[in-house]
Image 1 (cartoon, rainbow, N blue to C red):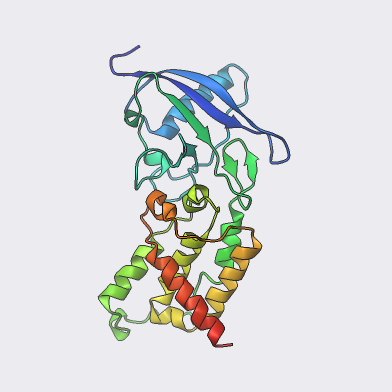
Image 2 (cartoon, helix red, strand yellow):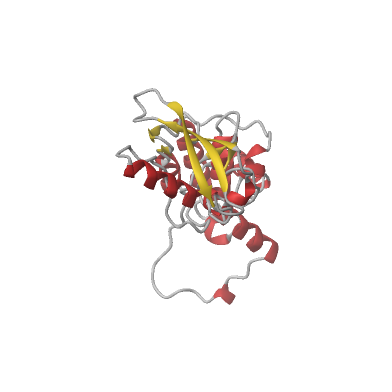
Length: 252
């Protein structure tokens, strides 16, 4: 073993499909550089499995830069692993020690059914987004930014809500598998801006209705979602969405 490299024991959830039972399978990995990302370590393991004519572990990934939100893994019981404010692809193996055992599981939620191994179906988020996570505007020449003054605090809060990458860590870490933080972020980014006020009533009612229809749990304000969110989306957004929802229903 090279100096400073690690030998690890991985216990990884393997499941052929959502219709079949799954189980944790143990894999030893050797000579892992502490400078590898968690996903690069998985690449090494998969290369070893393929070379032995075994099925590689299926997991979601895309940008590997903390932007897309695809790299959904529960690592030693925490969404995206032991560090705060990062996605799995931004987690490096130096966060672990030589000889460690690492347990890796998929997001656990009724509304996120397992497709295979660590990959789950998160299309419920897309259906919620389609119900109102947009603004309807006339196309054409973009309006000059100075024509529509927006208070800086509102603009900053909207920008912070829009930082949500829809990874689903909030659902995976919530004891109720609630999607409130995700939906609240998507409602808030428009609720704070004049462009979003036109459709505000329909937006919050339709998105909340779709969230409930997808089978996500209710929010009990535990706050775990905010802690595990890689982008630090604030619980304040949930309070804002609740206000939006109350106002929308009062208008009926």
